[in-house]
Length: 61
Ligand SMILES: [Zn+2]
Image 1 (cartoon, rainbow, N blue to C red):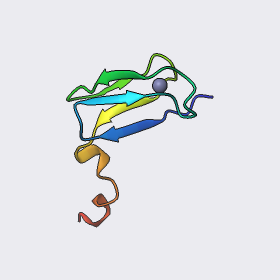
Image 2 (cartoon, rainbow, N blue to C red; image 1 turned 30 degrees about the vertical axis):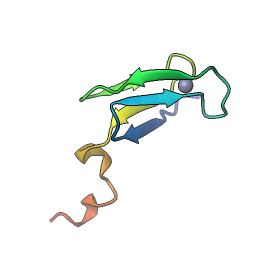
Image 3 (cartoon, rainbow, N blue to C red; image 1 turned 90 degrees about the vertical axis):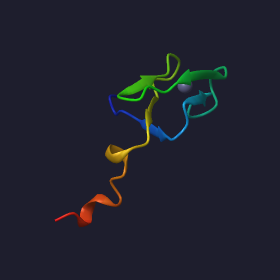
Image 4 (cartoon, helix red, strand yellow; image 1 turned 60 degrees about the vertical axis):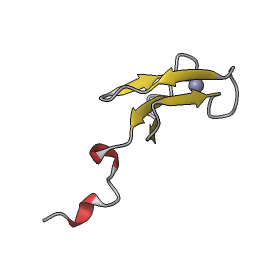
């Protein structure tokens, strides 16, 4: 599987137990730019910002 799953958050710290709760609880600090990748399950966490606001970006002209 090569599909990237990126979870957007407004928090500075995220916790992860895997998409199926299949690994131990771990915490990661979310960088201001880019993302952090969970070492267990390869989920990616990014700061929610303009790049994540894609649901509202359609109406720019
Ligand atoms: Zn994880």
